[in-house]
Image (cartoon, rainbow, N blue to C red):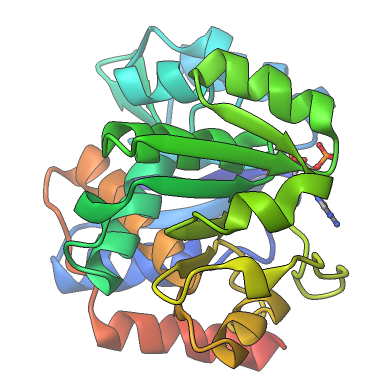
Length: 276
Ligand code: ATR
């Protein structure tokens, strides 16, 4: 039996055991996926212990550890380096390899929902300038999107991130103008998540062909997506990003790319709804 899992703080809400458990069963792999709630002050001790004698094939890494685990990596791939965060670790003969499957998840789900749209994407607007924004911007840059604009509550943070990724930043006050030319609007902040107030945006500015993508998946239809529906805009929800980042992590550990099926999505939605 080989072990995988998730380290983060908190982790009890995670849907990843449902996803990985489904694929482990489907592929007949003798492995498991368990949750490890590790407080920031316990991270170093835990990882040093695991580095000496690891019981693991690999782990996913979530908030708040995605950057703190970097010093423990022997190697990091290009995605993890560009994003500046590790969300998946694989341990090969004692060597720790770090990758980041969030950008893959972001784009793979978008491409599955909106086939061929990414090729025609000229202007993408990204809301937020945190870790999730970094993954989304990296993904959009890999798709050669010509113009990417970061809109963030704190303009300075947007400007710093924009300089790092060589994209554009704009203050929230200019949102109405910026959205006029957007082919895609994507929310990478936690605004609109269950218990958080939604972002108020001038959605009427968006062209009719624009797609609105929210990475928040609880609730599945966020206030932003509901508003987009009211304007008859195409939408992409955040649950698929979770499924697709897991797909790539599963492949990283087990060498087989599992399928993201309607049945799996239904099982995850059922778990989400049971908790709502
Ligand atoms: P993560 O790493 O999960 O993306 P983060 O680093 O805390 O999380 O980044 C959160 C981002 O969402 C930030 O850009 C934050 O804006 P600020 O830079 O102004 O803090 C943005 N954000 C979070 N909650 C928000 C809200 N309610 N309204 C607007 N922006 C919000």
